[in-house]
Amino acid sequence: MSETKTVSTLGIRVLATTDLHMNLLGYDYFLDRESRGTGLAAVAGLIGESRATHGNCLLFDNGDSLQGTPLGDYVAESRTARPGMSHPLVIAMNQLRYDAATVGNHDFAFGSDFLLKSLADARFPLVSTNLHMRQAGLIRRSIMLERRFLDDQGRAHDLRIGVLGFLPPQTTDWDSALRAEMRVDDIIDTARIAVPKLKAEGADIIIALAHSGIAGPAIRPGMENAAVPLAEVPGIDALVTGHIHRTFPSADFPPGPGIDPLRGLLHGKPAVMAGFWGSHLGVIDLELTRNNQGWQVTGSSARVLAVPPDATPAPAITAALDHDHQATIRHFARRIARTPAPMHSFLSLIGHDAGLNLVNQAQSDFVRAALAGHPVARLPVISAAAPGRAGGRGGPSHYTDMPAGDLTLRSLADLYLYPNRICALEVTGAQVTDWLERAAGIFCQIRPGQGDQPLLDPNFPSYNFDVISGLEWRIDLSGPARYDPTGALNHPRAQRIRDLTHAGRPVAADARFILVTNGYRLSECGVYAPLARRDQLVIDGGERTRDILRRHVARAGTVAPPSALGFRFAPVAGASVLFDSSPAVTGHLDMIAGMSPQVIGTTPAGFTRLRLHL
Image 1 (cartoon, rainbow, N blue to C red):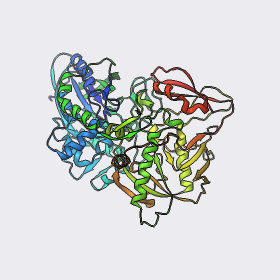
Image 2 (cartoon, rainbow, N blue to C red; image 1 turned 180 degrees about the horizontal axis):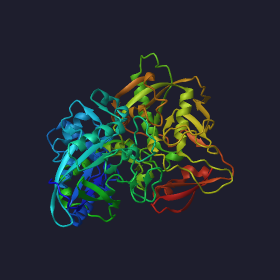
Image 3 (cartoon, rainbow, N blue to C red; image 1 turned 180 degrees about the vertical axis):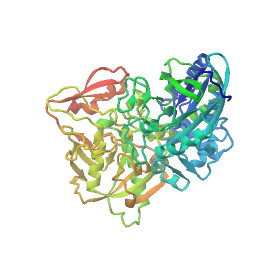
Image 4 (tube, helix red, strand yellow; image 1 turned 90 degrees about the vertical axis):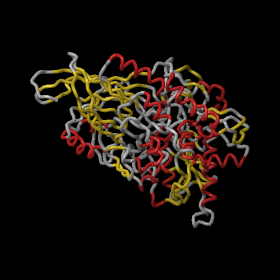
């Protein structure tokens, strides 16, 4: 680039997807029907429109793309048995001409070898700056994209765009099997080293692909959601964020120090978070001006574009992925067993979910058999599981809904979404009580004598609401939650868990149990991290829970788990609460007759709203 005192101005448009989770075709494999308004094939239309209106475009993906739907599960199983076929995600992203991508924690769900083989055919570079792998050749620590762009006068300029990528340091905590293969460093410490290096190599601008959420500004070692302090690192010009499945900028996003959710700024720098499952496209427009000091960002805007509900999936992508799509549908239609009663998660969060009980039964039976002859085999086995599909940000169709009759592989994938590995801990009664206290953080405090109070904290995802089988307890919502949605201790004196019993007897603080859970709960940063200690492990992540569930159901042939979970709410005098669920919940209100349910309408998001009396 020749030196000149002439001022040149050009615009660059950054387009971004994040947290696709293998939602490529806008199809709900659990319900076996189209799901309009989501999926990369539908986002393709927004990408095309944005490119058509702006000549200087860059397209990035921000990770968590390889895992999340039965399509991803099928590809992982079939490609392991039949290697050499391109991954459908890569086929679609190659068609859309991505410029670069980073990886997220869920991209390692099937192991690092599968990830590397799946991405080997990518015609775009992959970057992860804080990731160290034994086989790191495919994934680079930084990228320098060289692009020729036109300025506002139509003159061509060669720009060097530095790209960095980051994923949560907790990735190897969430799956301990990865520790032998890779290391993930602190995001901020890594950025402070990598940015000056890219600048020294001649980067005109630097874009950070941060598979990390937007949260508080305080810097802590090993931050999971570090996008805000990352924006403070000098030299970063724009950020693509993700991981927490929200949209930014958005009027619904909470403001905070350094966070401007209306203009899409983090410490004054443009940032986007494009939802999840292909629901949105992130767009950052940068205005660059060149002077004697080189190119400088002199203006910016950020926004997210929602995929229209009537968007037509790109025909080229649909055709290219049809073989895997149809094979997935056939594979997951295989019958495994039968159930005489329906199973659904409409009422999971208020005490009824037969499918969740089935998962806990399978986990408990497996661990009892695995511990035969072990010194702790005499201890009672209890099992913790959480509903994966119980509404929330997934919307009113994001529920398990299986009629009586055949149970298929699709049914089991619906019951247990994640490829987590099973583990078991020796715990005390005090730890079990605290485990349930943490789960009870999903509920808001309910004031006596007040009507129509919200029951659920929207910031607490249902997949963190562990229900422990083999126990019974009451939850007293008249007091505040002891822990917040992150597991932080908010009210040390609060106690919501009452009358905890096992086999009809009160659980003493020093009682001992074998608690079955999954490897994800062993994370050093999760809600249950202080309780899931590795020195208490008696089984450590040997098999995947979904495989255990499949074998359990197949052996039984017919399964009829009870719907009632182990908890109920303590009465709160004169109080009523609002509980949102699937529109299909109206056919099951007899299950909660003791709460005098009343249907009071439909929310703007499409949920059916119930009034319940505690």
